[in-house]
Length: 138
Image (tube, rainbow, N blue to C red; front, side, top):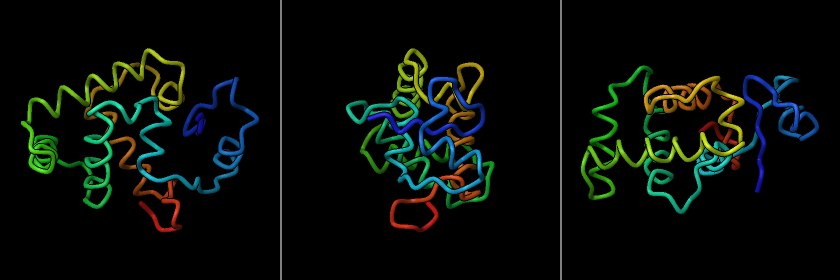
């Protein structure tokens, strides 16, 4: 399922998709957090998907920037894991997504760090550029 959301730099191969046109016009894109994470190339089969989704939901509700150590600890507690495992799983998910030709390349010019990735997506959610499917801001 290719959601192809062009959030900053439209890729040539997705100029015609609805979400790209909507974003160019400044319209909101209806997508929940899980779909956003998936559109970046992070599949739901990865632990990093669930960790990233939970971290984004937490970060979007707080004032940015947030301390990443605190976010990792909250995620680790929620999923009964460890801080280092959470960080590694998110980093692994970003590495896998970067190797694919997906929307992560439309948002970042070079491979992002965990902090850059999470802050950028959380900021987009706060600005209302990505809206939950139920119509409320994520």
